[in-house]
Image (cartoon, rainbow, N blue to C red):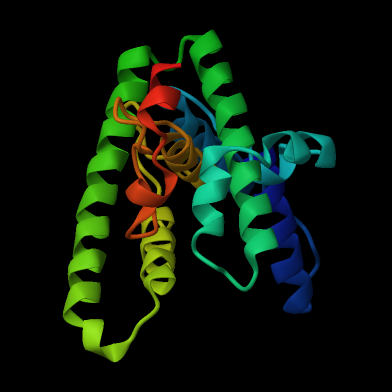
Length: 211
């Protein structure tokens, strides 16, 4: 219904701009209806638009102490507050939708693992490339945090397929990346990160890991 409503509004506006009566042909509507049903028929899950998944200030405040937030703060963004809020929103939206997909039986635990593995492999390639380039440009006195900003931006400009289905909302990929950046390996280092020195700067002590 959302897709059809969008078609109706866009078609109506186009006709008005052309100075024509805003009449919709039955055949045109039926064609759009058939195409919309066909597009959704084979989909395992349907993502909710980000604008419909509201995040409250209370929810944001509760996540401010997260490891993935510390990771963003290492990057010294001028608009750090906006970056943090966007990351928290994506993290919470992703969490809510992934839970819904699992409850509906749309995806399995294996689907989620493959999704995360694919994202981690992609991060690793991008991270290594930017770190190599930064080493080559060492004489140009480029701030280390700027390299991390480049990694962060490139990694998140992506929508990964989930359960062999293309995703339409960025928050699923971005939120999963933030979840990975919020977890630690056995040595206490974050599983992934953006800043070239993230592992050393955010690594827990041995005693803390054991606890």
